[in-house]
Image (cartoon, rainbow, N blue to C red; front, side):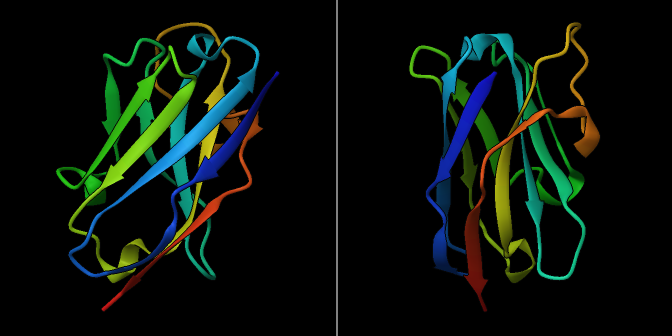
Length: 126
């Protein structure tokens, strides 16, 4: 098992930047493909970005491409989401999640992730 704790959320003005972090503990972090999801008020949780075990391969949803960057530091057991050019519609609770399945496919469905953090709130004001 892996335990995940997010941090770095807060209030930021539109156009600003934030970096979210996710600290992992437990089983070897580098065994997991990792992802960020978010849930806006009154909406379903949605995929944001995913990264391979090595960190070489990533994917993200179209609405954040060019603005958000997912990265990881396996030596520090850390996952990051650098967010820039933030918009009010980015307001949400952001969750990191771990996928311990085999293979190399980068999954984007919520039910494919077995481990979740508690979330960190990002609020973008207009």
